Image (cartoon, rainbow, N blue to C red; front, side):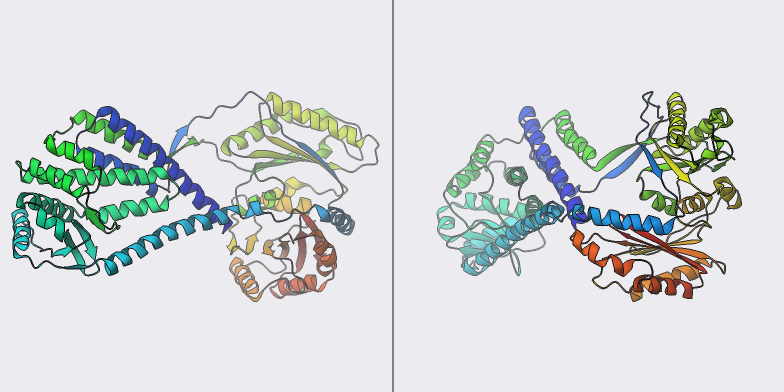
Length: 616
């Protein structure tokens, strides 16, 4: 909910900002060009209000040729010392670490919920405005005394005006003591309401001019237009320039209807001006569903009527005024994205005895690297035994082919342009006091070579292990073009482990003999942790495993990620419920073995502290 609220508020705020800028530009352009056409004014203010609807943007990709920066940014270097196969010792250390960090778990704050709060305020404002309009309309209908016009002379004048316009539909004429003249929508349809006292004082020519004006509103469907404009402003109720644009649009609508009156009765300008002047002191009940002849800037309208202003703007003025607003709208709805041109090289695994390089492309690979670095796009594992080992404790840099490594790394990086590079240098743990010093020399040599090749955004990890696994042999045994499709849903994710890179990543950090399936479950931390899954989770896992059609004797790794509890004390109290040999672990293992897995690993993660156990 918070993410939706944040995105929605951003779009609304962006649209409102463009609306405000467009309103300022529109007023400045119309004032500078002195546009005399109501069509231009009406079109410009419609374009201003149209910014409100442009809460979605359409991306346009523009290819470009990227250039490498000569500056070198190798990023951070992390050294980790420990044996990945010493599971029990590692888990014990992690428990201690978790207890010491328990009080450091971030608490929930108001900042996490501010988008929802602001969205609630915005919604309340919109509903308040709509409610006010609704109440005013109900009051208008119930409390405004109107009756059908019984004056035959007035009815004949109204029928004559409608007949001259060629209108097929007849609009009823009503009279009222307090309201009008205006076109309004009643629950049973539109009607024209005129004030009895004022109507009896006005001469026939002035009454006909006013009726012609109201009929123009009906023919142009102005009631619906003004309603839509006000609804747009209601969405941006906090923006005064939105209401300013609505008032200017309504003024241009009245201006247009005045032009229609003068065009139909060329000699009626004096009579019509007097009628407007008489209406200046007449009051009426405002409502969103009514359009009155006395609306808009009355003084400006009288001046235009007296001068018989029917001038139109030149084509250049029209193009400039409308073109500027259309250009602003295009800037608003179109988002230009610079996209690097596709390269001809295809990112492939590079397998050599000394190193292994692979692009991070499948969903499983991205999931596995997400824990260490969110932006890794190229992974590399280097055999540290190329530099020194038990049989050869002295350092020998010449035995490693740096030139080939840099060339293959650059080629893979060029095909996968975004993200950073992760280089893992795996050394064999030897009994040597100078072990760290030798490893640092190797690290500095890599930094120097990467700097000379202008390869940026590199993260180097040094690791020391006592086993003698060869990562390149794993890669050679795996199908190169295998796919790892994600199954399940948002809560439960099931991945087949097929690619060389995924196998390497698992054997480096989890299983000495690899894994065939990864099952990710995200859940909340229970008070009594016994069941690892809900009934729905079990069905999702059964279906996904059946769809994978894994061979008998396959292995699976279950990772359960608990959301952070409210406080660290809760973690300490419940660690025993999810550790090795707990009911939680046993139930999870029993379920997976019932699905045909011969070997099962469980990885329970709470607040970035995990317990990894193996169950044969």
